[in-house]
Image (cartoon, rainbow, N blue to C red; front, side):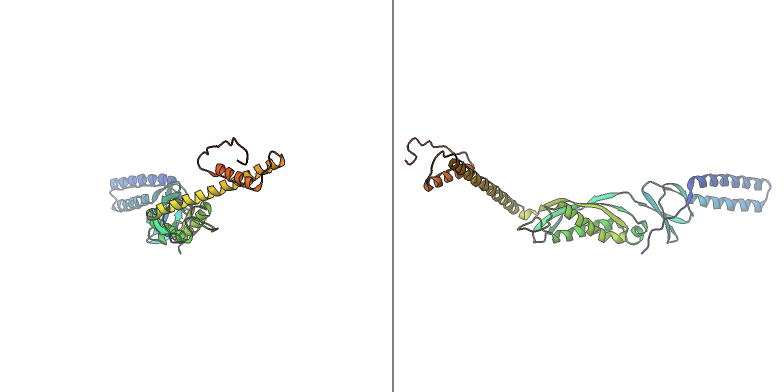
Length: 289
């Protein structure tokens, strides 16, 4: 594999001054040779001016968070990271590579989770180039490579975990966003290691059941929520009934036989667990009438 090598080059500002002086000097030399009618002097000065003109092609600009990859007739010779005006061999081919932090959002992928339920999922991947040589020479198009491999990793992750946990299952796509994000980042990074790219962050940006089962899953979620709420209500109601009976017995407010206790428990549970307000009935006769 081709690894990045940081290359030091000359200051472009210094070379700008040197080349300007040289260009003016050789132009004056051509003029003096022409005045003196020296053919040899004219040829030497013209050739020198051509060399200086070629050297102007060695000037190039490196912007912040950008690198210039240098090649000499197809051979990689190094990468310049230091920003500013620089000068190098004019025969170097100079390719700009951005080292800025970039991100993209994948398209919504329709896949099956670990239980076979069709879901829609998308992710946002934050990445940057850390090895310019690998990015340019190890893959054909590193930006396209990042996108394709990220979506492939997202598909594979989706088939590894369920959409939501059931019956004590562990990690799930919906209930464990931090763990899923870490697993997704690790998998994408493994796939992009050869492309000179580091993944800073990867998170799911869209997650939903596919349209063909969305309604059925919504009804199941609603039923689960109702059951959980009912369980909580019944547990609370039983505790309140038990507390009421204990307080009545402790303070000797009234003595109730087992049949009347059962009736009282039934009435209290209806009042506490009913969805609508109950209508009270006042007993104006005896307790046993």
